[in-house]
Every structure is written in structure tokens, then in C-alpha cells.
Image (tube, rainbow, N blue to C red; front, side):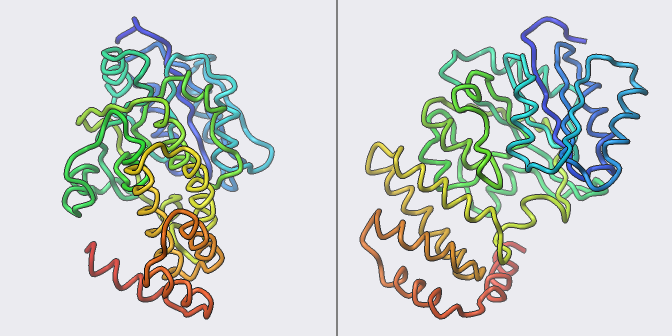
Length: 322
């Protein structure tokens, strides 16, 4: 077991993961890199997650595992920040307790991170996606390339890339604590954290990736991603707020063009998922950023008359991605 090296704080976030949390925490305890700080935050789970966590800690006999059971559900961003307040490691991992770390993950990521100076604030890796019962679905980068979402994996200055393209599997990230400290942690006003974190951190820090598959990510019906673009999806409003932040951060025409591309995409998604309030917000933001096209205006008309179009979006996605 590797002992030498900087402390890594692993903030394990649990919400209704009773079925998976023991396996997830065991994968943390089984890391080949031993200089880790384990912080477990249960965000007032409605199932018996807290009981499973307590029993796990008791069984391991470890007295160095911090357990924070939240008295009320506060959401992912605030729950993470509660854990971050206790973190003392040089590096931070935000780890959902329905996922699994391969045993060498922390060791390999620390080794990789230490190749770079402090201009690199975040590293990420490939991932294996599985069903709730661990049946293989796909490999992260391979799937993105198959769907032609990316041709190559961006790294370095990725500000423009994170505005336009999903390419980072959030569960695979390791982050310098100084980055999170500089940002003040996650924005607790948002329904989800990763897009905002990518935008704000990549403005000041560089990103690097390793092609190794170091995390097994579960896709379940309760995963946050399962709620994307459903009617009333609160994550869509958070995306709008992040785009507003990005509007103040862009430095050149290429970045402005990337933001316009993102806002146009979200306008279409909002319209065809029947999230008309957010659609109107994205339309007015787009109007501030650039001259409107015929399609932009047409989408706005559809928003105003509130056409039920969600079924068309579902059919389109099935035809395109299956």
C-alpha cells in the first residue's frame, strides 16, 4: 500500500444510496493509496442509508472516518460544502456513494497530478458506466466519440470547450483544494454543480486527463442526469444562471461564439422539453449576445403559445442515440 504523498480528502456524498453505499465506501477503504481523509455526508436520506453507513464504519473499526448526517435535505452543492469545510487534503475527490473507485484510482491520480505545476487545477479520467446491478453499459470517452460528441479529448485551457461540449465525467475528477477554496466551494444556489464548477475553475486553471478507467459510474433512475430536460427540471434554470456567469467571463470572440452556441442549444432543449419559463430566459440572453436568427424567433413563438412538444424530443433522441 502506498503511504507517501500528499493527503487526499474524499468527500463521499450519499442520498438514498442504501443499496449501494457499502460497496462504494468499501472501494474507498480499499484504495492502494493510504494517505486519505474520508468524509461521508448523508443528505438526510429517506431510506436507511445513514444506518448502513454507521454499521459500515463500526465494522471497519476505523475512527478516522468523519460522518456528517444532515438533519434536513440541503441538496448536493450545500452537502458537499459541508464536507469541504472539514477537508484538509491537498487534493479533493467529490465521490457519489452509488459509484465505485477502482483500487488504484487515488494512487494513479496523485502520481499523474504531481507531474504538473499549480496551473493545472483539475484532472479527470475515463470511466466505465454500468446499470444499477453493475451490468456494463459503455466506456465514457468511447461513447462520446461514437456519438460524435467529441473527436478528441480537450485539455489545458478548456473554458471554451466546457461551454459547448460535455466531455468530462464528473465522478472521475480530482481537484486541487486551492481551486475549490478560490471558488468558495460549489454555488449553493444551484441545483447541480458540475457545469458551474467547470466554467468558473477553467477560467483560472488548466485541466488534464488520463485515459485510464479509474471509476465505475452507476446510471440509475434516481441519478441526477435522469432528470435532465424533464418538464419542470430545476437543473435547467441552474444552467441558465451559469450561462449568465459565463457571459461576464468571456474574453474573446471564440469564447463568445461558444457561449452563443450553448445558449442556442439550451433554448432548443427548453422549447422542446416544455420548460417554457427557462426557454424565455435563454431567448432573452441570446438576444443580448447576438443577432437573432429565424430559428431563434420561431422557437420563441413556440414558447409563447406553449406547444406540447416533449414527445417529439423523446422520439428524436431515441432515433439519434440508440
